[in-house]
Amino acid sequence: DRLKRLGLSPRSIDLASMLPHHNVFSLLLRLFEIPRASLREDAVKNFVRDLAQQHGWWYRVDQSGNMLIRRDATTQPDAERICLQAHMDIVTIADSGKAFDFHRDPIEAYMDNGWLTANGTTLGADNGVGVATALAILMDKSITGPLEVLLTANEENGMTGARGLNSSWIQSKMLINLDSEEANRITMGCAGSFMKRLKWCPGESSIEKTPSAKKKKYYPFHIRISNMTGGHSGLMIHKKICSAIHELAQGVLDVLNAGIPIHITSFHGGDAQNSIPSSAIASFIAERPRDITSAIGIFDHRILGSKLLESGRVEGRPWAMESSTGSPVRSEERQPMLTVDATRTLAEILTEAPHGCEELSPEGHVESSLSLSRATMDAPNTEGELPPQMTILYKARLSREASGDDLENSMDSFGRAHDMQIYPKESQSLGWSAHPLYSFALQYLREGHRRTFGEDPNMQKVHGGLELGMIAEKYPSLDCASIGAEIENAHTTRERLKIDTVLPMYNWLKATIDLFHDDTERFHRQTRRCGQALCETILCDYYNKNTGGIKSTTTSAVRSSRKGDKSSDADVETWVKQLGKYKRSDVTG
Image: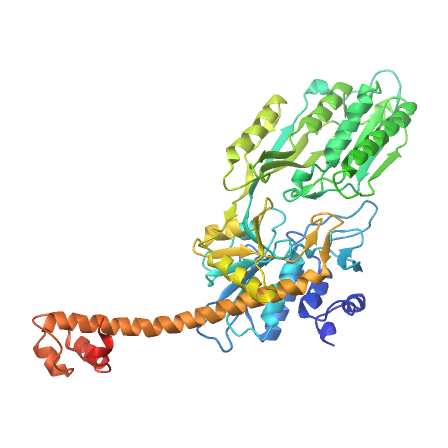
């Protein structure tokens, strides 16, 4: 009945019966059923809104689509409020041949040897498990202090939610982000990032628009590479994972180097702006039927060789290469296409484009990187009114210590060398770092981990991006840190969540919250007592200096010996009442 009230489908209820019985898993399975593509978070916001109304929580949605929920204290009114933060959207990638609509279809989650994973798509545990954990904490009645939960929009496609966050919204002094992907680790810093676009526009001489006078047939064909390893372009950029864009472009060069004339008409590569490309597709025109057979064999050889090369570095993956042919077209029906030389130029640009680690620290940590996220060239129309233009999109990441100017200069130099149009950087997000000694968020999380597991957690900075840089810019005094459950292969269709790390992370978070509430409640009570005593001490000292010592705490005695001070009679009445409560010996020193 409880699961049905959450709206779980019979399939999810069956899966829930195999998982630990806890609100975190119930909520996570419900989130798997709700479409959560970037910029399409309305359905999940409606779900959270219904949950808030059901439990009587305060909530608001701001102009950027972020959602803030507050739950007041039950028995600890003097405790400080603490904020939990996660993002609502997910990366939307499906395997080749998988018919799936991320705007409508539920994620097909299933258990596999102690992990939750999905059937042919990203799972959405990034950051579904963070959202589910935050909501479960709100529902936990054993937590008696005040809480806030911030759910941000569009994290995966530019962090526009965090970028546009209301700067007077959050009441807490401490925020715990729930978007880390390693168990028993505190993330104490993350990389900043920005996007950069370059565009290649071939000249008139590079486009064959006018059909030859001689009647001739042309033979279209298509090559698609998919199901490559892919991965998070920040957390996995150092593993030298093959890019589908690079592999398809290198295959084009292999074909041309074999003396086979092919003309490219369109190219689309890349999945998401923060993922290493795992798929790419291109359309070509050959001048002879036998050239298609030869070209497909060369592409197949290229993919097999790259797969064997990569398999020694990362886990194996069933790469796929598909080819298809179209009906022959007569010369007068042929669409405009790049010349053979221009096709070579395009392929060289994509193979030479910088991609990977740019700078490593002496300890071997990635300090800065460039990821060629997408490359797109649409086919021109038959009239040639829209000439082919290729746009490439870069994701640049850098630590707080690295220089973004060096990365931008590298891309600008590459663009100028290939006569490309260069656009200003966009979607810039700030890096973030917590001080290991002075951050009380780190101290509370460390102590919470000790109380839960009897040992210290790992502490680490990551090359991936978190929204904490954007949030900290809006709230400079907000102390932040990040934790999470174990997630592998984020931003790919191999994404999976380790089941037995979810509840330990929840218990660690709960212990930290309880510790913070208890400490801040005790602090505020002590502050009031100390503040009252200090105030009275100062008043006694003031009157000792101005009256030669308090002989009596009656109003008339103090008034008659004020020696010309400008205090009003009302002030004197108030001070005497306060001073009269204490003996002189009580406030000495």
